[in-house]
Every structure is written in structure tokens, then in C-alpha cells.
Length: 316
Length: 316
Image (tube, rainbow over all chains, first blue to last red; front, side, top):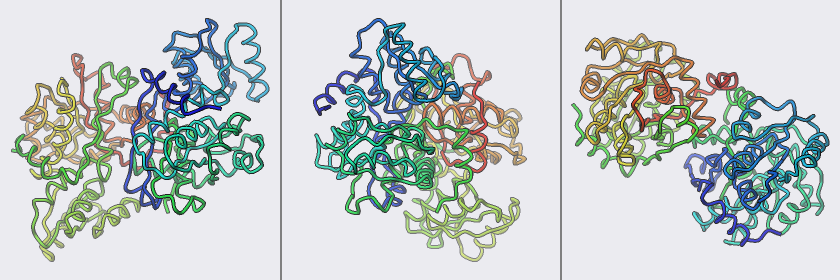
């Protein structure tokens, strides 16, 4: 299990590389949520997402010449690529052969080698294994790794240091790395509850918490494309220790939360991040939560998909 | 003419009401511009635009019971509405009867009365005159008013105090209130050149500067919908005194600049604001400019219009 000391060590380790992102507030969003909300803006983190924190923390503990490898089409891929570049290490990213060009270009721009595979989980893992056998590269999971969890936890550590009197903190949950690290930091430092926010169309984390075992994700179609992954044994164990509950939000609520943050706070957030604010605005959210921290996990929007939805959105 | 002392007085006057907005930087945008760029983020100002500064400065110098009136469908309308509300004053806004519902709702949400007119300049002015005759309300121009110019100049004053070694500062130009105030603050405080940024499809400010007389705007169709207005004698006089030149940018350049700021800096800017960054990236921009301040004037995006354009945008 990752401890608060691990998160504090990660914070020291990555301090020279990661941005200390701002905590922002908005009167208009407070009114919408019916409570005071403090947004930890990881969209302003390097590569536009909290993922850089964990990737950098992992790379700073890697010494092998053979470099690192992962399979991801999302923010972790860019984060690992940049972290490796900053360390002068080799990085290979296995991406589905139907990945958007812009994502492939972004990973390459950070200096990583992109290798394509078929888009199934099996094909990606097989391609990774093949390359690891050839090159000796070390696999770095997007979430199932204590170093990644500890790095991810540094965002919430900064948040609770900036606003120590929060009563509740919310982070989105996909694979659970961010929520695990958030739980460790928040419950270790202050008296506050921690909740996860998850798309209702893929409520495997909520189910996993209820049943006490990992319920696999069915890779749901959701606007929150960073939250499609399922928990691991490791992240579920952290959640059971530190997290009070998972709040599920509909696709409409996720889109609305994205729109409200974009138009009122003027911060570019991806739907996976906005899901956490959707939870805070939801009827399911604890009525007695008055000062709520939200980890806005990232700001890498898929514009071809989201642009038309934002254009058609009618606020209510 | 507005002086630096006027801007400094405006700053004191509005200090308790306006946000001191952050100056942000982005390595990726510096690379794109080929120079260091310092963004004064007025998208984070109240009502999402610098306009609040001038409106508040004007309202704090109004004592009449009859309140204020303006005609605008843009940021000035919301700014005047909020400034009046904060002062407990009445505000009336004449809006074209084809105004987007969301803009009408925003003005009403700040407590102003909305009166509709036909959308021509003449109809709007006639409606204003009619109401002023009935109520005694004072007209507050969006730009042709020394109090508005002095208020607008407080943004650049904060910028040059935060980054005193800028060599160039750029602000967008429509009616010229922001550029006038920016010119006063920058040339009064530091040794730096000031440029305006204007859509090429409506280059009336550039023409006005060349010819030394106000060339009327033809209300061009441009993405930068905040920059359709023409200069007044007052703002042209300020520009001639303080501004080195106007750089015109194409619609493609404006869209690209908007996309780059949204996707790289994660700050929501409207195209009228991004036009200033487009100028900094343009071949017309002075090659020796190394440290450039950009006043990002606002972040109120017309999503139905811009969403599909962002979705279709292909970066080069």
C-alpha cells in the first residue's frame, strides 16, 4: 500500500519537473453546486494532465538503459514520453492502429517511439510483451503501480495544503490511480471524506467497491474517455482503505459539467475531469458537504468529438 | 486624453471589485510564436472579459439615481450590468432582437433590464435615446469614454508591473478602448512598443492609423465578433499617441490562435482575444520582439458558432 510518506517523497522527487498547479474558484460554479468548490487545475500540468506526476515519479526511479514501455492512447502515453525525454531515457508507446493522428503526433512530439497494434487489450499487451522481450524495456502501467499512485497523490497533497479546511474531496476514477493517491493524501493530512466520480454507463468501480472485488470494466462508451479502464487489485485495496464512496454521473451530467466549467471558469477541462464536478452537482452528493475539493484531472479535449456537443448544448 | 495617472486612479477605484488576473506562460506557445509570450488572462476577469474594469470604473463615478444605459450584445453589456448591480444602480441594455438567448439571459442574470430594438446601429441608438429621454439614464459607451479607457488600461498596468522587461505589448482593437488604455499604461510605465491586432476582413483601425482619420467600420463578418466596431475620434487620438502599429490577421490565423491557446495553455479565450496571439505569430510581427505581452481580452465563446470550427480544425 502507498503511504502518505510515499506521496511526500514523490513530491520531493518530482518538484523540479512538475508544475505546482493553481487552485481556482468560481462564484458562478459555487452557485451551481450549492457549495464552495476548490478546483485543483491539473489541466495546467505538463502534458495537460495529472498523469505527468506519476510518470515522472516512476522514471526518476528507473535506472535501466533499456527504457520504458506502456500501452495507452491517452494522457499516460504523453506523460511517460515527456518524463522519459526529461530523463534522457527511451520510451516506447504501443497505440491502437486507429488512434487519432493528433494523439500519435503528440506522443511522437515528446520523443517516444510509437508502435501500433490492433486495438483490443490482448493485442496491445501481446505487442508490449513482444517488444519487452526484444529490448528489455520496463513496463509502466498507467495506474497499477505504487510509483504512479504516489505521484498522482501529489496533486491532492498540494490541494489540501492550499485549502486545509476542505470537508470533502472528489476525483474521477478509471483505473483508480488518481483516486488511490488522492485518498492517501487527503485522509493522511486532513479530516475529510474522499469520493470517486465515475460514468454511470461504466460503473465498475462503484460495483467493485460494493462487492469488495474487482469488477472488470466493459470499456463503456462514455464522453469521459479517460475513465473507461477498470480498477486493479492494487487500486481497489487503496479505495477500500481511503474512499467513502463512488458517485456515478450520467453522460448528460458530464457534458453539462464540462460546459459549465468551460463557460464560467474559462478553464479547458476534458470530460473525464469534469465528471468530478458533475458528481459535486449531483443529488447523490452528500448534502452536508460545504467545502469541496475537486481534482480537475486534465484538459486534453477530443475536439472533433466534443466541439459539436458543446455547440448544441442547451444549459438548464 | 487619458493619462497614466487616470489609469492608476482607476486601478485604486476598482481594486475592491475587479480580479487581479494572472499572467500565464506556455513553453509550447512560446515555441509556436518564436518568442517569449506573457498572457494577461482577462478571461478570468469578472463577466469573463476586461470590459468589467471600465464599466466598474465608470459606475463608481456615476451618482445619478436614474441609472445607466448602453447598447451592446457583447461583453460590455454584461460588464455594465454587473457593475451597476454591485453599485445598487439601475442598468438598461438595448440589445438587437436577434441576440442569442444565452447573451440576453446573461445580461438579465446580472440584474439589468433588457430592451430590444432592431439590429441596425440607428435603431439601437434611437431606442437608447428614447429611454434616456424617458428615464434620465446616462449613456455609457463601450469604448468612447475616458473612464472606460482608463479602466481598460488597468489590465496592462498589472501586466507591466508583473513583467516589467517586456519589449512589446499587443492588444486586440475594435472600438479601441482596450488598445488606448493599454497604450497609456505601457508607454507610461516601461520602454516597450504597443501594437493592435485586428481582423484583416475589417481593417478599419489600420486604415484609420494610416490616414490619420477615423475610417468607419463596415461591421465585417469575422470570428472575432468583439472587434467589429470602428474607432472613435477619442480612441484614434490615443492610438496615434501611444501605438506603433496595427497588425491584421486572417480568419484562419484567428481560428488557429484560438485552437492553440485552448489546446496548449488550456485557457478558454474568445477569438477576439486570440487575435492578439495570432498577430504575435504572424510574419508581420516585428522580428526583434523577444518578450511580448498579450492582453487576452476575454473568454466568452459563442459555442454554437465556434464548436464545429474547433472540431474541424487541422493544426499545421
